[in-house]
Every structure is written in C-alpha cells, then in structure tokens.
Image 1: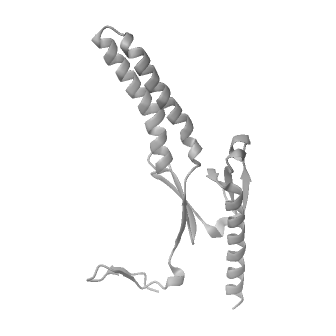
Image 2 (image 1 turned 120 degrees about the horizontal axis):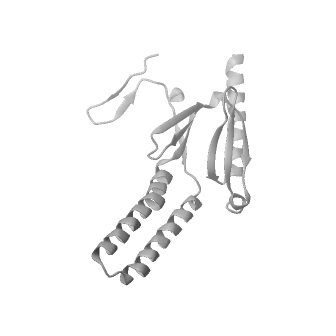
Image 3 (image 1 turned 90 degrees about the vertical axis):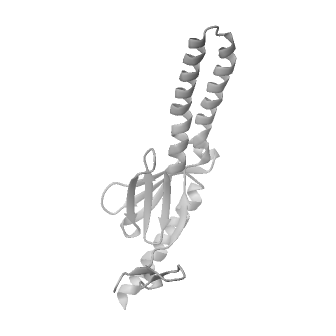
Length: 177
C-alpha cells in the first residue's frame, strides 16, 4: 500500500492512504491549571517586594541590584514554570499516546494503544478537590506511563478503559475473519 501525500494546485492535501488507516487526533491535554497557582503567587510576592523595598533605597546601584534580583527571581520562579506548563502536553490520537515534556516540550515519548493493558488513577487530597489526578497507563512491557495532574481524571480513565475495550473487540473481530 503506497503511503504518498502531495498537494494539489488548489493547495489541498491528497493522500493515498485509506481513511481507516490514517491517524486521527482525538484530544490534547495539559496539566490542571492549578499548577500555575504557586508561580503566579511567587510573581505577586516578587512584585510586592520590589515595590515595597525599592523606594527605601538611596543609591542607584541598590535600585539596579534589587531590580536585577527581582527579574532573575521572576524568570526562574514564574516564567520558566509557565513556559513548561504551556509546552508540556499529552496528545491522544487514534493509534498512540504522545507525551511532550521538558522545559520547552522537546522530549517526546510515544506509546501505541496496543501496548496499553490498563488504566488507573491516583490522586491526593488537593487533586481530589480539583477532580484532577495522575493517570497511570499500564504497559504490557516496560515502565508504566504517567500523565501527571490531568483534569477530570476519573472520567478520562473510564473513557480510556472503554476505548481500550472497544479496540480489543474490534481487533478480535478483525482477526476472526
């Protein structure tokens, strides 16, 4: 079966792969938004320290030193966690689960649905209040994959289990033919 994709003159993409074999994107997940509460609180604290301490300093070098420290603190404890929050994501497609991680989301881990045997949820007290949790995707071989602090974790785990069950039924029906 050829796997060719090309653009036509009216800029449409045409593929010779049948629709049933093409990968479809289902959902893109991120951590629960509460992951940004601490960085935003630290940014507020950083700004408060600057505005309440700066006017008491008499020398120019003191102003500049304080400003430099405030900027470095803001970059380390607000900007980098925010970039990490928005660049790390979990991508669920029809054939695999793709996990983008790292400071800028450059580290990628892919897990085909065929390797996943089950799903479980763990969550702490604060995650329970937020209806978030860690989803553990149990692999047939190798280390389990953990999707950290996913919103609506229990519902998502039920959806994963039903998807895995329907996938195994469809694969079992296909092998009987």
